[in-house]
Length: 150
Length: 440
Image (cartoon, rainbow over all chains, first blue to last red):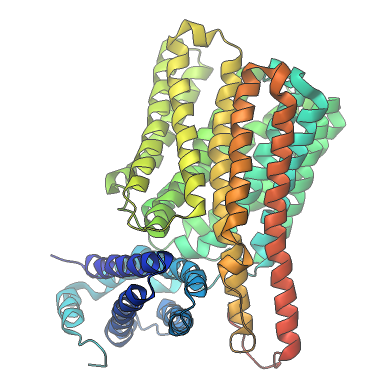
């Protein structure tokens, strides 16, 4: 049986590849390719954030009765990443690849610190606490529509 | 497992880790000065007072300094637990560790028991605080990941290293009776193979796959490597102490194989990276792991090859490969990620929307990192050759080491200065309201 950890870790790795593709295009000086890659990456990130914020975190908060703990910090970090992603979008809009790469460096660390916390701690705890509901939560995450709330 | 114990809070204040990172490079410069002062004679034996002073400037002043500072920073991220009272803990570790490293170096050089007694007190205080603070956090870890296992083994090894070091300090300071040679061997092995290698491994499990975007380390390796190495170290120590020579040799060979396996696994993963763009810290990781592998091979072969076993330079080469090649390289490389990121992160948190925050690459341009890396690499090669031909190359090696240390220090201090200037300017333009909650 798939676990929440396995399912969402796979999404993280897909986002990593999206990041690497956009960064590679920027490094090569290919603005058009970078914009296309970044758009895909941005959409994947936002979709993943929304799945967690609308589905996973509420389920965890309900199961543990704790809404002010780890999920609060995870939401805060999503916000930080959104801010940096917005800076990167701005840099791309202005065609400033140098600035884009500078922001990308920080985003990668923000992203990975966040991933470490989720993959090593929060997701395993979700699997543990949600028990029998894990299967239905994964199904709901899988069905979550892109680009909006459910 | 309960969620109340999990705190995924943000990083501690910037000043907590930064003080360690800004102090460490100057210990490379002090080591260079000592090497230049004592000259080629240093290479005559690893047991000379000047050599011991030099080693401890590097291991305590540079390595332990950054490793403990980085642990205080990293624990909330990788373990999910915050070190209590971070500012107080940082002061109680940083000041005694810095002074202790200096006092111990002087103690070795002048041989005075009073200086050894002073060093023992200072280092006991600094490491004691660090061990208590970090142990408290590690044993409260809500989820036991491979990294937590490795960090626990590393911390256990640090405890043994410090314990043996304090006992040796007692020998020099108060005349404790000890089998000094054996205790020194154990102290060295626990420090380099236990504490340093296992800490680097625990950190590598996270940072190599995530920041270089490589496949993960095999999960059996992640969970098994550190405990296995810790058990082997215990066995090796008992066998060495009991003078069971052949068994100790075989266990030592197993330890060298383990270390080599970690280095090879990491080098292999780095060839699989999906992040396409070159990253200046990558060169540091590769150099570090190549040195570790070379060190492991040398250590593996020495007892079985008579020509090596009788060569006095082998211990020196091993020390240079493990301390300067492996540990200093990986630490130097990591500093270039950690310091600009934290400066950016704390600026972003405090100035968002009020002033423009420079990117990490503006805070520390890559070209400066690359140039300092070439100085580092030249130093490593010069030191290795100087160990074999001290009369010719000691002074060039000392000069290169000094340049490397100053360059690293200047690069990191420049980030610190820019951080302060931008923060002050930003806050002056739009003062923070008293009731405003600051993130970060």
